[in-house]
Every structure is written in structure tokens, then in C-alpha cells.
Image (cartoon, rainbow, N blue to C red; front, side, top):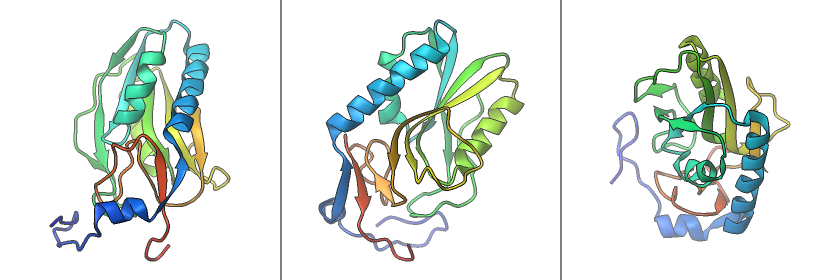
Length: 192
């Protein structure tokens, strides 16, 4: 049985039931095409600049794995691990789980799986700039509810999604299904 960030035991649903009772918002081919289009945009913007890519773990791993081979500029990569969700469906305070890589004087491309409220990526981007990065661009696989005001506007967005709890392609539900090649949404979430 899983435990929450506060240590309480969680009564989680069956993972197969969660998937079976979800809506597929983007199939694997749609996701691949969106990432390929995003790669072309990033290549056009950054040209042959040397770029340090910082994927936010764990969510952006599938996204980074599909995006990076399509980028044409020389890259260095380090990962940053932060967390706000644990086994919950709503975010909490940002928790740094890994040290900040050396970014002084660098052009940084920060990768994240989803831009929802924008809190996590805003805080991480601010920390990168405070650590001396020359420039920090942000790329997200999915932006939820793009019309809702957020503290940050991503420089590159592969897909727009409705304001629902989404999972797959690095995004999890109750800790599961980050490995799906498609993006799904829960049909119901308590309190939402």
C-alpha cells in the first residue's frame, strides 16, 4: 500500500481500472507528431547555440527521450528533480530533491511535462536564472487550460489540454502510468 507525502496510508484504486475509466486525449501518434513539430520550433529558435537541457524529473523523462534526438544543436544535459504532487492529485509546496547543476553563463532549455498552474516551472526557472544562466527557455509537452492566467508563459508548447487531471507520457496518476505513450484524463477526481 502506498503512503502520501505526510505518511498516511492511501487507499488507491486499481491501476487498470484507472486507465480503463479514463479518456484518451491524445494517442501515441498525435503525441509523436506534436513533439516533432516542437523540435522544429526549438531548432529554428536556438540554431547552433550550445544549450544545456534540464529536464524536470521524473515527469519529463518520456518527453525528453522523444524530443532530444530531434534537436540539432550541441547539447549538454543535467536533470533537476523537484516535486509537488507525490501520490496526490493537487500540488503542494515545491521540494528540491536534487542539487542545481552549474548553469552560469549558459543558455538553458528547461523541459517539463505539463504547465498547469505554472508554479513549479516558475520557481525552477527563477532558481536557474538566479544561479547565473544567461538565458532560460522553457518547453512543455502539454499546457492545461492555456486561457487561464499563469505566472509564466512557456516558450515552447507541444500540445494544449483541457483543465482536467491528465496522465501518461511522464505524467502520473497515483504514481502510475508515466510510461503510457498517449495522454489520458481522469473522468472524475474528488473535489474537482
